[in-house]
Length: 144
Image (tube, rainbow, N blue to C red; front, side, top):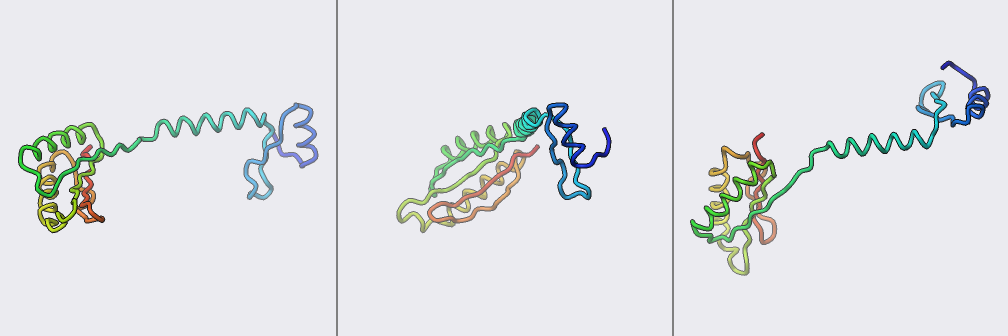
């Protein structure tokens, strides 16, 4: 194209039946383009949609334990945790304390640390067991 004054750029844009769009207003002098503005907006939305669809979506799967979960239930839930981590999902394991079972905090922490140790080759612990209200939560990221 070329460098035009504001009046000549506006007249050229109106002759071509296009729009004069300011691309970077902070530049000195401001940079403008003669384009079809609706087509420009359409292209921008299209680019944003492609970028959004290519972004990886984080899937979080949850596994719930009680403070006194027995070995069979633990193994069953661990098998599911392995499957989730192999699929690439983040794992949120938590121990839920009902009523007075909050006195078994140590058992809940031991259970979650045992799970972290058992899942060591499938995922990496993002957040160690932390008590939040009546739940003790631990997050595990899958290994790539």
